[in-house]
Length: 346
Image (cartoon, rainbow, N blue to C red; front, side):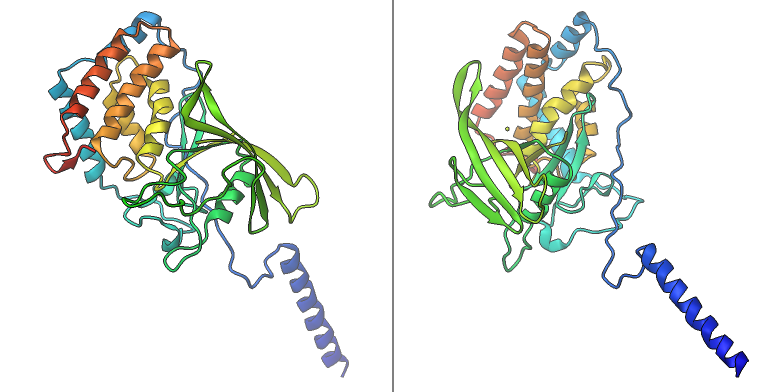
């Protein structure tokens, strides 16, 4: 009897101890555990490198303008073909794979090394350590898509994002009329507010963006307050929203305009320390970070013109180099080209 009693006491004691240990280690959980891959930075650290001398900056900038109109067009088409034909076999698998219902366009796969995982987006760090999140526009719940606006706001909150740049209109023209964009996560007009999940999003201010001291008719700047009603303390945060810690940049699909915008800073910051680099070298590094990153060759051409403009303004150079490449770009655009050798121009 004593032996049996001792055995029962031992088994009960062991079971209770095991349960307590599992509970303390947070392993006693029957819900699906989420696992997130750390984002891998694909570029080496170069932020401490000194910029090139002014003479070399002039040479680098000037080299971007070389070539006839036809030669520049050939380059832009070649780079777009590179985007179209890219085939990469990633050795690293996702620990958490984004649901297909969270893709606006499933033909745009996610680069797993830099994937944000909770939304369709990738992290891109420029040489000067500015961090961009290239993402698609959030989506509302529908027959084909999951609600991703809450994920988008969670990302802003979790990563302490202070700037969001939206590239494109809130009411695009669909060929017949101007329609409200799907996935709106803010209200147009000051003092308007909306609720998304546990978040209350209020537009505090909406003003034209100042460019050279003048109001821009093309760019709006909003101050938006996001309040998490689940939290009792420190539950509000204000962000600056440009329709311009990490900067979220998005258009509808998170490629094309988004990558061209990020590329202005990314490529410029690399060219200013690498005198042996051409635009093509910076472009190849940029498109590693997000698959199917450009939609047509005109976006790539606009990016190269923009890089020349950035270098010119940043280092106080003569505008003649920008005027030269911008004239070539404008001349090619004026030809009304739509496609070259199976590659879309616009």
